Amino acid sequence: MQFVDEASIIVEAGNGGNGCLSFRREKYVPKGGPDGGDGGHGGSVYLIGDDALNTLIDFKYQRFYKAQNGQPGQGRQMSGRAGEDLHVKVPVGTTVIDEDTLEVIADVTEIGQVVQVAQGGRRGLGNIHFKSSTNRAPRRTTPGTEGERRNLRLEMKVMADVGLLGMPNAGKSTLIRSVSAAKPKVANYPFTTLVPNLGVVKLGMHEHFVMADVPGLIEGASDGAGLGLRFLKHLTRTRLLFHVVDVAPFDESDPVEAAEAIVHELGEFSPTLAERPRWLVLNKLDLLPEGEREATADEIVRRLDWEGPVFRISAISNVGTEELVQAAHRWLTEQRTLENEDDEAMEREQEMRQRMEDEAVARTEARLGRPRKRDEDDDDDLDDDDYDVEVEYVQ
Image (cartoon, rainbow, N blue to C red; front, side, top):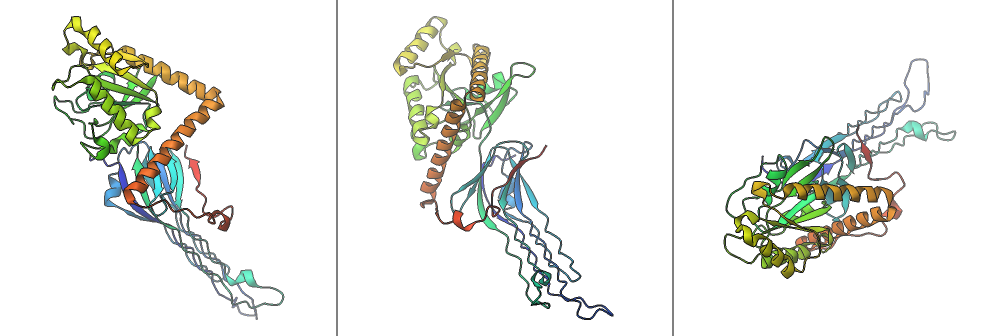
């Protein structure tokens, strides 16, 4: 299946049905009075998170989604039928952006999460609502309002705990194959990985985490070289980054210069993502003579002036990979426990994620060449129940 992580769609809610102008006409009942019923509410459009989907390919072929209109009211105080709501399934990890205002409407991050993206039109009122002691034969009704129409941009970001970062051919795909059931393509040439891959790393009956492998970066990626920075957005949801470095490149390039280039490109893409905890993973040590391995690894660490955790592995032969994933699992468990028990830690995590979302909006603004639309008076014009984003969860 083709991997598509961005798509533009149009959603349109149903119009509300018009109110009915009608008077009771029945034998032996003169001047029966008004009996026009109300129209039905228009259907709304909702997006629902579905873990069975892992691409936005369907939205490339069907771009228009419309809910049903409400039916008009009828005589005998009969209300029109409400239009059916439209539920559209999207992959978990989808960000919904209004293309006209660049507003982030919602972030679908959980299975069964339901988000309203277009509000159905309100029903019109029949003339029965306008009778009074002084107006016993009202000829007034109200029309149904139009349903909301929106141009939306969907951006899918894979949901993972750990992200793999590095140059092409650094061994990232080999690493994810060796520690999980994922089977990405592996070959002895750069850019073997063209789309993100996910793998579940299992350490026990109920102990696991998700690892994401994205296409490798090269120097100048922030200016569009190679595959550019398109897939780095998939790492913005991760909590921990593995910076995989090839200690014995086939082209005899300098591993330190390659690692520094990755750090530069990461900062160009997102300064906030560059602040995420990052572990140095020195890979392919098996390609070096046994007597040179420790010295080479120590020299790379020294030249990088690295102060964080360092792991020496050979992904293809599973040397050192068990220690790496065990350490990552312990760290992730500690972080989740800390955030559950410490409100400040939770706030820091939420603040970091918000900064990355703001950076994503800024990148979109730069790409489109226009700023986000902001209207300070918008909130004052809406009632409490007008056009709110509704979020619920399906069991």
